[in-house]
Length: 246
Image 1 (tube, rainbow, N blue to C red):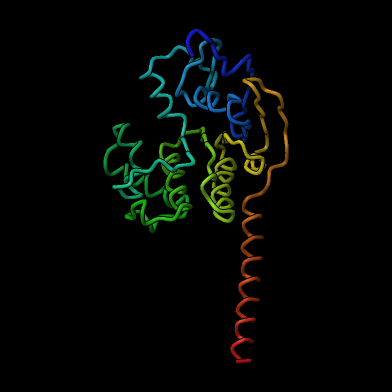
Image 2: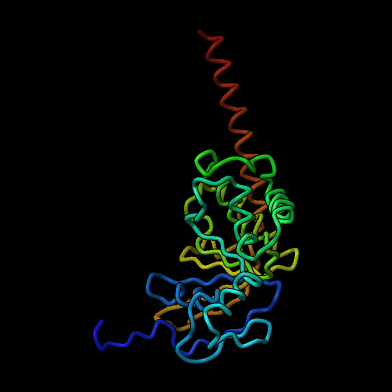
């Protein structure tokens, strides 16, 4: 406020390997949102440089940054950010529309992206007709449709239950297996556990940078599904015995 200068990031020096998964952690005010905005070419650093594939994007014009975002970066947000009055297919097509892709190619690529997240049979559904997990999968398909090499996910499971979170993180981990670079921004250690590298920010500084073996979301999903099936069978058996007793 006034003449006070706030340094959201201070002396951050970071390299991220292509095809890796990284979680950027920190509490409110740590600088993680500022870092995400700079890495996503939504904002420019006031000092220093930021390079993507060796190209310095610092100092680029707004139109140049928009071009970089359209070609290089796919975004996934906690709130989904879907257009409520359009179908899942049309939501996924939207980035391609801005790029001037033909209607036929938009449809083909959007359907392929929906198929990649298991929603090829929901292309005509609007947001109100989809569950939270399905809406997030549409958002992931939208991030994928331009074949961007970098996926930035801001609290991607924050609005989802445990089982659906496993499904979403399994999809994101599958993208890393296919060579995409995944950057997760979160304040939750449980979410950071899905990445192979964790960067922790505090007061605009990197206070920790560590490697780890990420949780396998697909394996976790299989486990919780099996446990639920066992519980459902036990409940059904209990109800059957109660009916016989009555």
